[in-house]
Length: 366
Image (cartoon, rainbow, N blue to C red; front, side, top):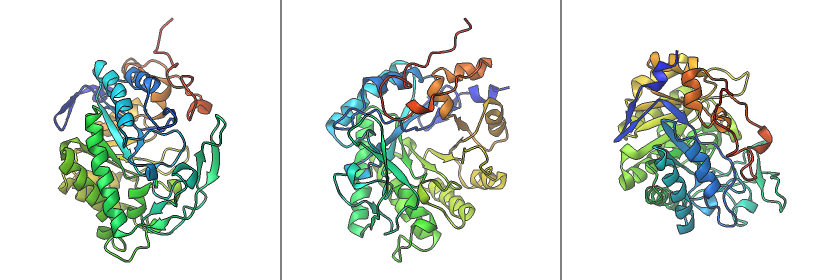
């Protein structure tokens, strides 16, 4: 049934052993102070190295890029050293791992960014969005986001350069490549989606202008580390963190065409995954496949059967399984043999230590 998931695949210069992706999932367990990846994170990812590809959790490219307490960064020497522990552990288990480079833009609070005002495409506050801050207890304290300031051209050039440096840092830390987080309402998405961008310069208005910041970031990181090591994550139909696009099909097919021209190695689509969410239109997936010739990854509400069917239909090359990977470190083996899946404990998703991170066992018939 799931044979399509277990065919090897070439990703740029990398040979992957299967089509199963562990997508990026924030777990908020970086060492404090300093937001450094650490030994328990190395264990967690190494346990899941049987995935064809791991995309590590969103990792901020600067202090201003941080949206939530206790998430890891990749802009200091200590952070690079922390991630090196992780990549070494994954590679020791014959895994492949990309870093997800993250700037949250307006989806933050001054408490998370040294008291600064957040930056965004525009001075538009994300409505009904909360983030968590370290309120001195071990539990995340949720607070409303604040009004950001619109980025100047100087700000834009500065952040593009921070992405470029973060990509170089990721390769120094031993990652096999990087994924740009351009989804789920974070900074790049705040330029792309029409309702979050009211600029009147070359970065606002029509679709080409709203994709310009994405194009500049992709170009900068590709020149730094090679386009064959650059993937991009997009979320056309989600309204996460308050970003909505008026014409998502048109906008995101244009994005796929752009990323095809820029030769990124993959596009990773985050589909809406809550229970009664609308399906991604099949016509959209067909248009994307026609527009983009690289590796296509989709992540959403897939099970072994629907994942295999999507690959067999030619609409995707790889499929991401999010929450199942949290509680099933040996997920590919369970899928292959039809073993039952363990469900995760929601209370241990964010913050804490080993509990709910590294203590989920592999499947045992006994």
